[in-house]
Image (cartoon, rainbow, N blue to C red):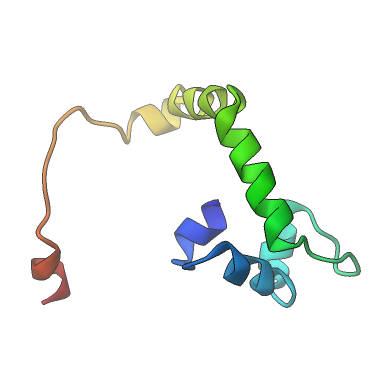
Length: 87
């Protein structure tokens, strides 16, 4: 899911297709060069299971408690006009 967000990939099917040829993606998740990539339906099922369980919340809490991450966080709120960014 991180790779999908970082690379602005629209669907899980496209992410799984990318695993077929992108060595960086394979390295990131620990798939060997000779191993087959996952099917997109298996990926979706596991993602749903992960989000339903408490493990995702524990993971995010652990990440947010890291000193290097805390320096990046701020309680201030701001909004950005998407039209301005596009222009």
